[in-house]
Image (cartoon, rainbow, N blue to C red; front, side, top):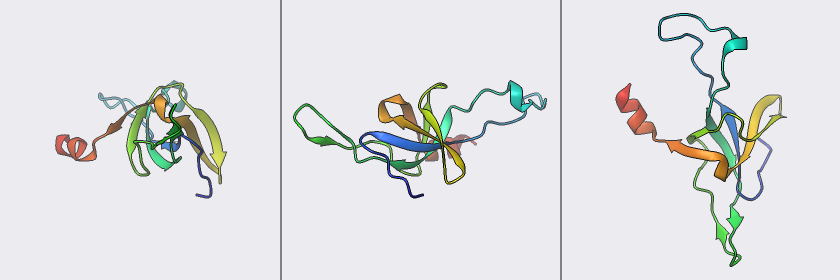
Length: 103
């Protein structure tokens, strides 16, 4: 990707939600909610605090994160639909080993 976010912004790709309900009913695209989970593709260097020191972003490329349904700005970069948002809009990082252990 030839895009580098500034300050404490992150670029992520939505992870598509399951198109079937737990009962096996296929949900049409128009009735589905936007996924609130995504993969971080790029992060900015961080924001500056009151003292002028750089505070790095906690998320890193490759992390799976949760975010609010209406968070961020949807953009198209190199033909791909992506979201740019501030780090403060992220709710948390999904721990990959813990998620794999439950599956």
